[in-house]
Image (cartoon, rainbow, N blue to C red; front, side, top):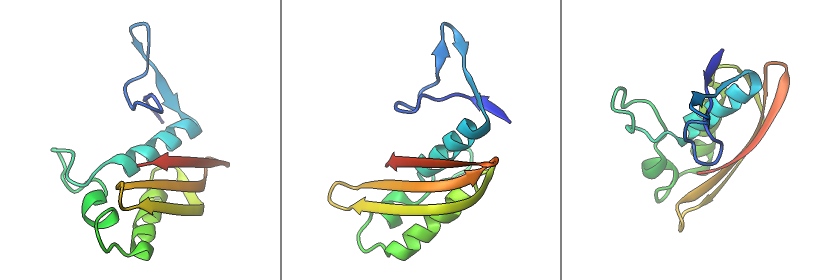
Length: 118
């Protein structure tokens, strides 16, 4: 599996001169998890069913934390290459409408740990 490398901070295409950079292996799985978590439901015009309901259910008023956690863990575990979610933590600040997702997964015979601010 190979894909185009995205910058970890800006999410822009990573270029070296005029050449696109590629990513594979564990780094590709890490990138795909982050892409899935950052995609807002309805954002992609070719398939409005892709993404997470960040503004409606997750960061909106009255969201059930257990349901939100289950939704995010399911989304991570369904990412191609992920074998299992080992650890997961979600911290939501509803006033600033930000969330920090911390997780550890096993994938491709190794462990991936990441903190993502959404």
